[in-house]
Length: 67
Ligand SMILES: [Ca+2]
Ligand SMILES: [Ca+2]
Image (tube, rainbow, N blue to C red):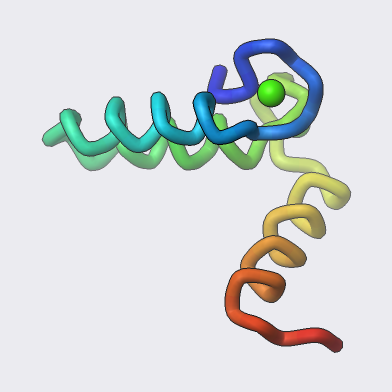
């Protein structure tokens, strides 16, 4: 859903759209749905090990942890 062009990357415009959508939602379940969709790169409704590694790596990268 978030990866609109299905290139397995979230570009700036896709991220911006997701943030705007999430900020307008009052419903926690809907917000969690957007987060899940962001993590589910293959859009198969499941978070597999590779997708989880991708997210965790991104979190570490953002926090400046290198190893
Ligand atoms: Ca994309
Ligand atoms: Ca998936």
